[in-house]
Image 1 (tube, helix red, strand yellow):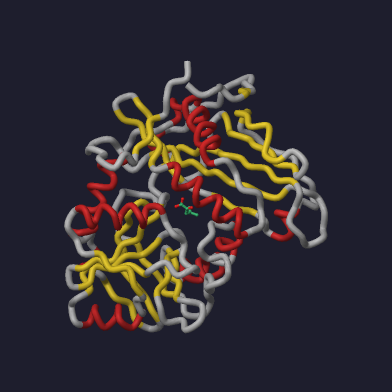
Image 2 (spheres, protein in one colour):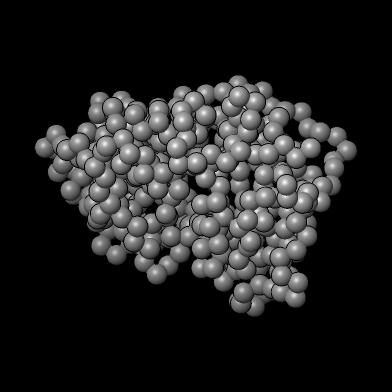
Length: 359
Ligand code: COI
């Protein structure tokens, strides 16, 4: 058994929220994991501390120049045990994001161990209802208070935990309405689109507000150069079923390499579906729709899981996919993916990682 990390106990535990009323990312547990970096010491002082406000310099570089990255993963409870889903993938990806923003990389194994100890302490917070899980948010930000534009010399990493329900609210598999953005772009190759950096999400908000004003849940981004090829949705990667084949945009440097995307591709292939990762233009999509070949559209993401898309609006035209109902393939992928996550199905690939009981 690995060494126990330092644990700073809080005076009083919080009252837990009503499981019927969780929302997404609205409630936080009693503790968080904290890790510090200083140029002269490297990463140090890994500990579990009470969840609470932190003090930060008004000149902290994260606030001015956006050196901030994050991750999202989930823990599930079944048969009295708690599992993390493919957590090593998230720590690998956070290191890719850190490297892109010239921030210091973390020890992936040490952090996985720290996360397991944190989740062990918080196992009573893991909800068990349909579509519910403990959403885990690791993030790193520059804390050095200096206004010169250069990589900071000090950083903080925190992992906070939020018992959550469905990202889009309501029942799982409620079809979403997506607006295809043709004015603003999310990322270009050579930029930071492939990294999970805070600024990517800030840059998406204006379009999201515009889409929401027209009654759409999220924005579908086109490529930043030709504004022709499909990239991803605000908080999900996107998949299409065309002529029975599953098609998703290939990773090109500006698309986020989603862990759910990767898992769904692997799962679909195991279930015998043909999966194509390639350029998909918005025109191809609408032409396939007109020919009756576009039968399903769905998004994938840690928070969003697998979410059917019922409506897509591009320029002046809105198309309704599969009668605004969850398609057969989407449903099958969802059942298998959630079945493995929730422990109802076998896990031949070892994607579930059990959180040990440390005492
Ligand atoms: C996730 O799916 O975990 C995300 O990071 C998307 C979002 C909630 C920002």
